[in-house]
Picture 1 (cartoon, helix red, strand yellow):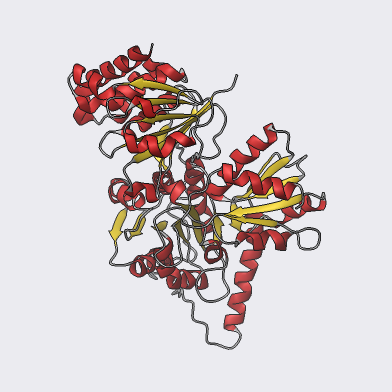
Picture 2 (cartoon, one colour):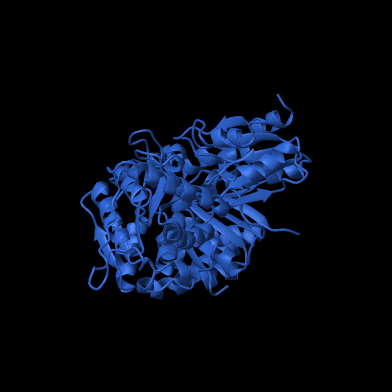
Length: 352
Length: 181
């Protein structure tokens, strides 16, 4: 037990980033993610990195772009309204193949909303978020341990695909404390990105990293390369399937709502109801294939989200030829509890 | 036999409910259980109570947020008003009877354990340790983990600067447990 530490999900993200060799953090305060910059302001400096509290979210995101272009492992974190402000730079990073990790501890919206948990940023996270045809690889941790593990993975993926990767949590994940077992991955070392990064052109051909393509055919070519990249990301799909095998009804839910739904599923199993849980861990790419397999077995589906219905679109698209999904919303501004999921689960189970 | 218990711990801001929530979670973790601790957000933050939710389980924990808890620690009157009705049938609540009128507590539907936490803490020498008296009583009443586990975990939640206060906190936990035993 001695190697376990009891920390908030926010701190788990920050510690995961440090374990992954993150050397630059650019932040700007906003609740409920403030524990990340607070922790980083000391810890990343102790680890030999740089911490900048930027003058705005826009500045922080553009600093991230700059650091990423030099091949440095770098991260920024914010919460919903702040992440909206970062979208321009995220689009530029995607358009110019720059690796970076962006954390969004989703709070209630739209607008300034509140500081409580919500999942209203699913569309923004999985559809790119800014302008143009691009995607982020999006991880949705449900536990502090997953927050740690997936943040480490996010850095590897960002550099593997030269693409921004998002960690999408919420105020529950950020503020909840859980024990985690920290671990240290093998790091890539100084050579990471040395075939593309901007590190001084002495004794080599000059390099240019940009998202502007004006020559005839150039932008189409770039979009084609990006699409090929997103296609390749399909191999990174991750999900949790809990009691799905013999289930008549499968609840689809991600992140904090996924684990809350698990409590409801467990309780209803004990009462003899054949229900299971499908929890996407990668939101993009969405685990469509395994969901379609379950749909082909004739199961029913109920999607539960802490928003007014966003991921349910992807659930439906996954199984559009064979099945459909019901939907139950928890309104942003309200706190979700497992008890309130039981009635809608029962209703969908009975096919009403 | 599997272990599962959840608790909402509520009181005025400053009564140390977050501290004993952390202590309960650490104690569970140090006993090898899975635990979650969450300070609960929402409009209730602006009412009379500060509260947190702790879940202890030997299985992986689903929801860290509990609407109908199996146990409560009630440190003041507004907390009783807010949470008593939500306590699961057959659940147990520790009530700080120094500040809460015992007659307001349900005794048939649920088990109510009355502990004059402020008075006991006063006798020990510091009324600010009423929270420790309450957690001692809670552990004794529920038996979810040994009282000693909380005493052994004090160093996890009390900063090095206040280390000299650990023995007195331990005494308060023991006094709370003794009141229930």
